[in-house]
Image (tube, rainbow, N blue to C red; front, top):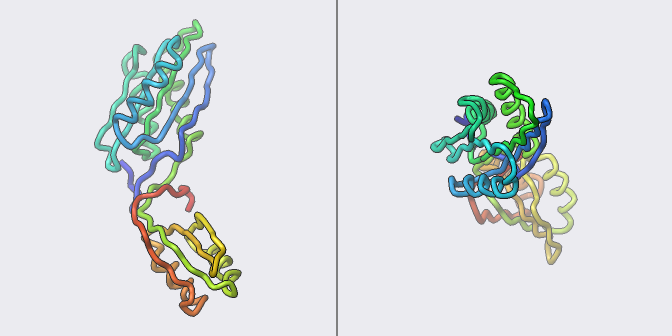
Amino acid sequence: MSVVADGYLTLLKAAQDEYIVQKSRFLCDAAPCGTEEEALAFLQDKRTRYRDATHHCYAYVIGANAGVMRFSDDGEPSGTAGMPMMDVIKRRQVVNCCVVITRYFGGILLGAGGLVRAYSHSCALALEKAGIALMADTWKGLMSVPYPLWDKVQYQLGLLPARVTDTAFGADVEVSLEVRSRDRELVEKRLYEQTNSQAEILWTDNGFEPWPIEQ
């Protein structure tokens, strides 16, 4: 489903938006979910929280390769809610996520076409509000920088595809940073060149971490 070469797309955070059409109120909730159990727990939370609602339609995709895909119309006419929501998720190429659309019926029938448009739009709103991130293969490291070189290193870090997660000032400046695997060699080379190899990086951990999609 996802065509990102060095990772996969998922949501940055849980979020909610709202859409009102013909007096029907659609609460649009989306969240990152790493397992099917998390997706079902997210769904149950919305069913419990909005127990007086007319429908709780949902769609979720689990696994970096979209191994689990489930959706439901929850009483709406067949094909008017769950599938349109899943189509939106597929187009965005997002995995490990769950979207729940809670509908409060406003008394005016929307028709099949109107329902498809409403649920598709609501799903898109939820994904946009949650934000899409690239889960990329990432290295975490600790870098020790002598104080006379700190200004130069700090400037370079602002130009490089790396992010600083913590900075501590002791005998030297100790920097915690994260770099995608594809950028690790470039970051090392640039920092070593700029400091005559005096900035030492110890890579401590490797795994998938979220990155803004524009990077």
